[in-house]
Image 1 (spheres, rainbow, N blue to C red):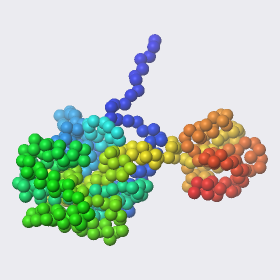
Image 2 (image 1 turned 45 degrees about the vertical axis):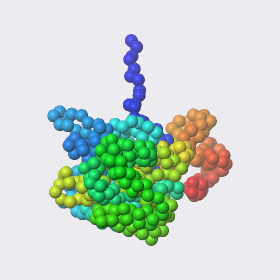
Image 3 (image 1 turned 180 degrees about the vertical axis):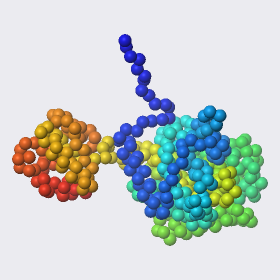
Image 4 (image 1 turned 90 degrees about the vertical axis):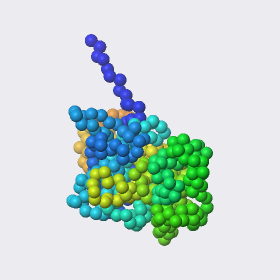
Length: 440
């Protein structure tokens, strides 16, 4: 009787990760963790599933539409769409034990039912860091430093971190008596780079019931051009008399002064009054990071201040600021820019097996190298040496070590550098030092 086979396939917007994709993925995660730890951030984790009421309404109507939700028994539950909202719940629930200020990082999978596109999937990993329990602008400035250091540590030099402050936008809306339409206005502004100012004004008039004059004033403020100092002076003039807007300008002045004092290039940190960040919970400084060689892929590290996020969970004030590295989007960009090594093994060294009677010797020496900090794989079978070298080429091993009867008689090993094809006979006593130098 013929067996009915199930077709192996994945859902649209979801993907498998083969070793060649997972190795750089894990390396990026470890780099992010290392940078976060260097600033004193501590690791946490939260459940993938939350009560629906915890997540609903926190990221705005668009996030609610994209949320994966279902019933478990009589309970309405949902899968987290980011790591920030669960963190707000986590903080409200555990803050007495944690104390404030509290600095956390969190690497975890999130889910959004949005349309899949280049570098964007329905299941993806975020690498977040946040500081809660302080309204100090110092935490906002440090957040910028972390984003900058993270991009440099990953290996990028040609990137731009775009900065704004929602207090500036909120101040203008207060002046124009448009606070109640802020969600529609900010969502429209978020589309400015894609659809242009004319289309944004049309959307603000249609979705937010703005007059043409109101829409023009918003576009005028958000499209100011010039040096950082000139933009700040213009914003200050346009927001004169509005306390919220003036405070936002002052915070940005402090931030850019700190950037200069820290020696960070002003080519990498740019004031952009047009960025709004689509999520509703941002209230202060906001950040977006773009790769200058591939801007169309979107921001690869974004975030901001969210002073009011935890108010639905606790009466205690828990202001916060943080950002998230878009891991999968960044990896897609690195792949397109050919910045990833084509390897599918975490071990740079492969021992072949030429003679089964020496299996214990292959395993012994491989273990000795591992005990000295090297990653080593032993080919499991005594197949034709040509097949073993084909395996080494396919998976990107840097060094292949072989030995047969003649080598064992002479107490030496053949070491082949796969990139150059150079092969060297090395005495066993010298093998560790020799391969360590090759790898360095």
